[in-house]
Image 1 (tube, rainbow, N blue to C red):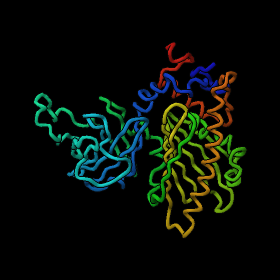
Image 2 (image 1 turned 90 degrees about the vertical axis):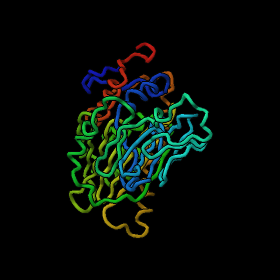
Image 3 (image 1 turned 30 degrees about the vertical axis):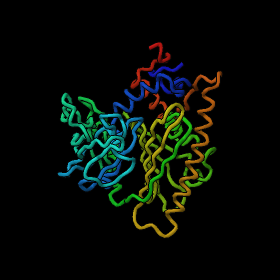
Image 4 (image 1 turned 180 degrees about the horizontal axis):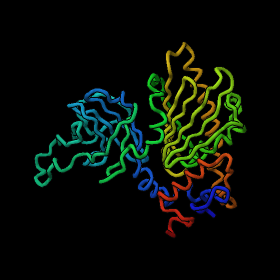
Length: 353
């Protein structure tokens, strides 16, 4: 039975019902994603006044905007009238946000500035109904946002470990590509797979395994973060692959002259979205980017296949969770502990708490 206080040699994983939706999805929305800083976009995507970027973060539509005086802002991307989105997904440059449903208009500070045919709304004060503001912060090249909350933890408290380690390692890296994967598994299944200390790499990723010194795989666990590392085979000697996880579902992977980030988000019961961005150091030769993306895509397809199989099997009657392998799965156990503490899980069902 799951017990968050167990040592890893006695620990048992979360039971299947924690991965199957139900009441836990609502708990996660409030206590995990609703209580965390999440990366929304790259700073370069909202570098100039009038630039906006809109996306969904765990079921919450949000828009990041650089307003007319150059201030960076974030707010709910839902019109206060009839709940249509005021900005389409992705990035662009606008003077104001106009709802496509009834034409309500908002400036880039989120203020309601125009209501077509609204002259008879004598009891409605539009200045009292801006788009709800999100907290916003910047670290390195990423814009991070936090859902409305009176006293959120500062961004630095969530990223301090990776921030200190990363330093200026990415200063000369530039963004080269983005891709989104939709996976038929709970977001925690995908994170579990990432955090197993390379345990699955040999069986699931034979091509990737050939480039790693798997016996030297190492895992370090911190509060709200973990770092997995492994030497790279071949030249130059001393090359390393580094795999950071930051609570709840953000990853930064650095290997040679390439880096990528992954943001794992729930997308309904038994489904998740994984948002990838790739970065490269130096110039990319013709054909090199395509080859890199094809190689990465192969790894992701392999991960998707095993994660979707796991999700399908979690609904069976006879699996009740399993133990952890201490040599490999320390980061996975810490993730289970942090999830349980966040949502208040003590081994009982959500309806029993």
